[in-house]
Length: 359
Image (cartoon, rainbow, N blue to C red):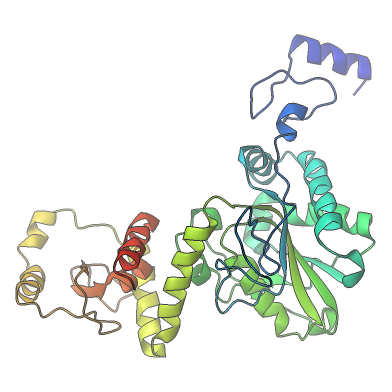
């Protein structure tokens, strides 16, 4: 566009910052410089393994109390904390097609890599992929766009086909239990692309670590030299409690026999599909409810998945992929119910009850 015409349009129809609402000048795109200056980069003291900022917490390397147990993560770093400005910028890039924002985000990631990692350690950059259905809908992968600029700045080649996504799952920002959602999501179609190489896996945001953990686990099967992770942003505010909750669920799930794990996952899938009966009063008169109430009064309740007895017990009447009818009663303990029920709030409450009980 002609610069004079562009200036005239800007004068007549001034653009506003998508975060604070202030008028943008001609050089600013969607977010003003004042807002960009509020982005909190991660520096100073952080866990040498998971990269969580430690502040004034007294700790010895290499790992902190928030690290995932059973993790495939060797070294994780994030360029900045995921505050309101970065979340707005990522929303503009990912869901509104404002690709020009990628340049500024890439600059933050480039600065973060120079600050937190040694460029000479890595042979290949691998972006976390989108499923082909999601990429068709969006027409681009925002991580690839940022990764290309990172590759040019560092001289490390990027291979966007080394890792593919074979399972389409809900958006992780909306998912209650991420490590179950991402199981089996990735594949390495050609192991020779990564074998024996130092891999830097990149993603846009780190919340619980489940996505990059599963991606690292998949890449590890191709026998690379190692896999480290760099993300643009990290949700620091929710991470400690949420990650501790996932540890609790993960440990319980792994302790179950395979048959029990399978039933728990089928119940969880069924819970997503099922809505409550239209006439709940009719359900309360059913034999299923009477049976549950009788067992509850007699104190004969044990979880039907893990067989544990518990003071806090839940009954479910979810269908489970044809294995249970919609009105079947399934008695579950706190932790098994936390797996099945898609509402994160109830899982947090169950976890806090366990903490109060000293478990």
